[in-house]
Length: 416
Picture 1 (tube, rainbow, N blue to C red):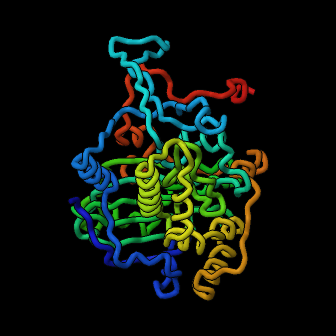
Picture 2 (picture 1 turned 120 degrees about the horizontal axis):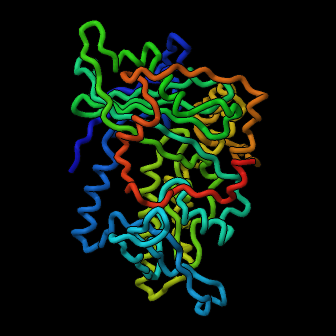
Picture 3 (picture 1 turned 45 degrees about the vertical axis):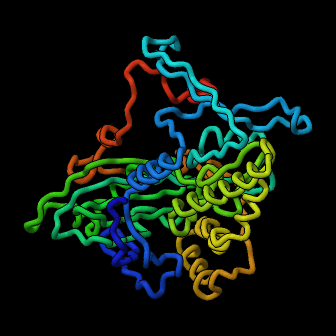
């Protein structure tokens, strides 16, 4: 159905400024093994799945984002409003807020159950969590940002199926993060960097850290045209928020009339930097719960069978084993590495203790005056790049006359 490459090798490096310490695979926790897995394009997988869904009669509306949650008046649910669908936004609005010649009125889409799968920090998901108080009693959610590029490199420096993960440089000991590099088909390499958004130093820029990471001797070798190798070419760029709090930050995932799945809820396994498998599994569990409810004539109530099925699933077992991962790394890279090794290797994930977090990421940020400025090198346009040229190749398109899609809740805050 799509081009995929079986993982052939799995390397783990601890980077210093100019060197690396290879970590033998045998001493890595079992969850870091990618044996039996494949690298591939998630976009291609989604397009293939969309075709399968349409063959089954599923209607897909690409280009129509859900802009608003619709609720019942509560009369069928003891006075509690239930979700009854979504409305798509009006299209063709100009910068001044007035309709243009391309104006198209938004649609109301009504449903017996609505499943929200918007990804990390989904704007409707955040509203639903607040409205139904779904995160009551949970640890605060934790986030990361992942920045990645797709490159075409010299065939002599390409190893199909090679997976490389690194920790260490360029991040400081107290900053959570690391890199990944996947060698795909056709001499293509996906390279990326994740930074936890609970960092302390406001001078730190995750984008710049990623650019700097590529200058490491052991990383730049793949991309540089030297010693007879032809220079690599950057094809595309992208960035994503990552919901990384894991099981302890997972909100209640059902509410009258709907459910949250995937990263909209926060099922990503931060220890593996993987969430697609969790999104697929929770989508399946929610679908099965909704199917059974529809078959028995129900609508607009809570799909309690979905969280119950999750609690009995392999995904819950996996996330439960990784529940302390982010908390240990908050105590520094050395402590995090040591304690994760003990929990996963010695105890094999059967951990008798639970470490909770009580603070959201942003409170860790210190005033700039208390922190050391970071001097990032200027981009060379060959290996390292600026933001503008990166966003230009990110396949993000905006009409010249469209309203600004970023709005301030309180315009006085940045001014003050």
